[in-house]
Structures are given as C-alpha cells and as structure tokens.
Image 1 (cartoon, rainbow, N blue to C red):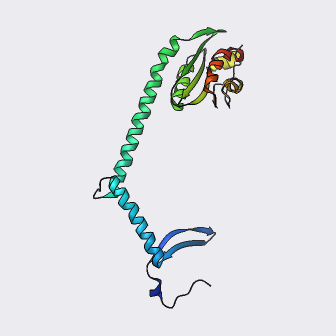
Image 2: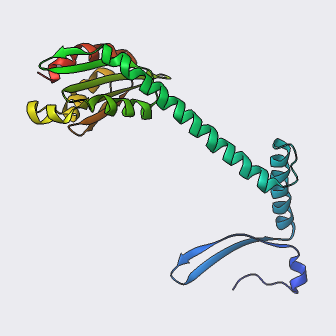
Image 3: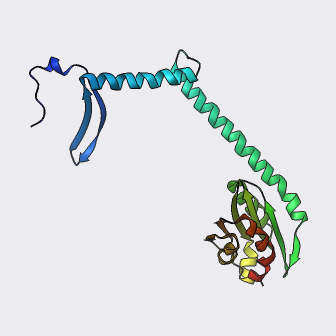
Length: 205
C-alpha cells in the first residue's frame, strides 16, 4: 500500500502540514512534497511578509504581534471600564425618574447601552428593596428588554421578571425569559419598546 518512489531523493522537499488522532492509539499526519511543498512554504512566507508589512517590518515579528495583542487587551479593558462608568452614571438619573407603583418603586425607561452595562445597571438599581426595574434598550438597531425585581418584591408580591418578560417581549417581536429576579428578551422591533413602556403595569398588578 501507499505511494512508492524509486529513491527517497526523488521526493524532494517534504513538509508536514497537520497531525491528529483518528482513533485510539492511531494518529494521522498529512504532508506535501515536491512542488506542492514548495508552493505551501511560499504561501506561508507570503503571509509572514504581509503581517510584517502591516506591523512596519519589525525585527521580531512574534514580539510585535504579542505587543499588539497586549495593547488590544488594554484598550478593550479601558473601553469596558468607560462603558461601566457610563452605565453607573445613569443610576441617579433613572432613580430620579422612578414612580410609585403598587407599593413599590418602579424605574421604567429607554436606554442606549451595551448589553453588559444594561445588566449591571439593572442589578445596581434592584439592589434597593422595593424596586422594580424595566429597561428597554436600543443600540445599533438591536432591541432588548431587561427586567429586574428586588428580592422582597418577589417574596411579598410574587412578582416574576421571567414571566413578565415573556409576555412583554411580544411587543418587540421577540422572546426571552429568566429568573424571578432578572430576565431579558431580545427582539426585532425597536419601535415596540414604546408599547412595553405603556403595557408593563399589566404584568405587575
């Protein structure tokens, strides 16, 4: 079986390109030889040259790539911190807009934050006893609905964020669910948030 050659020298350049397990105790290797191996090596060198050109031809390409990765991570960390700061900065504004509802404090509003910040904001607000939070978030054309219920309202009134979000999500042509204390839904109709901000009271009577 296999492929036979008159002499190993006729194989020419030999380059492994992959290796992996196909069964217990059995491994498979793939390689290219001759002209195919040369083409493969040239293609890989072209990729390296392209990467070096993007990075302004550094002396140490691997080190330059590592530095770029570290800078990207640092930038992302800073972005996340700014997003969280923006979300937390909205706490006072939202609390000022709270309304008394059925013996509780209801914070119902439209926001334009990233998903992670919305969740942080809901948990921050609902940490105060007697608080119901409903945020309709629209950003870059994507709409989400987030509901938070403080622990005492779950116990005393039986309010359930998951049940409410499932019903209200139909207004944004979406669906979702969650726990009694926190639930989210995504949808396709951002304009439906206006309906949610009107109909929410029916879910917490």
